[in-house]
Length: 78
Image 1 (cartoon, helix red, strand yellow):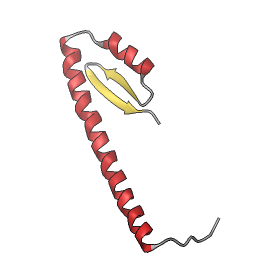
Image 2: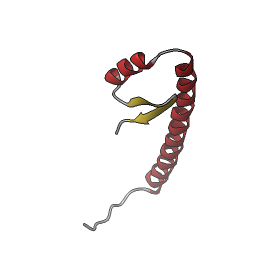
Image 3: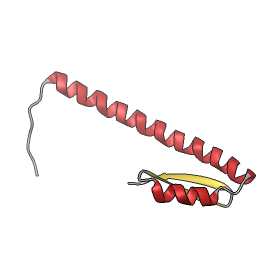
């Protein structure tokens, strides 16, 4: 499907800035998930928290925590 849209230059620049901020936010979110995964891995090696993680996974609508051995992996639900 082809077409065209006319928007103001101001709106175009606002759109470009929003796209850049979105990309930056996504990068920060991925980094945060990795850091939390490292922290959960540390906790899991100290205490049995897997039953609490299962409870979290049931309640969480946006993320899921899984363990591979003692390594915690946080994934974002799409």
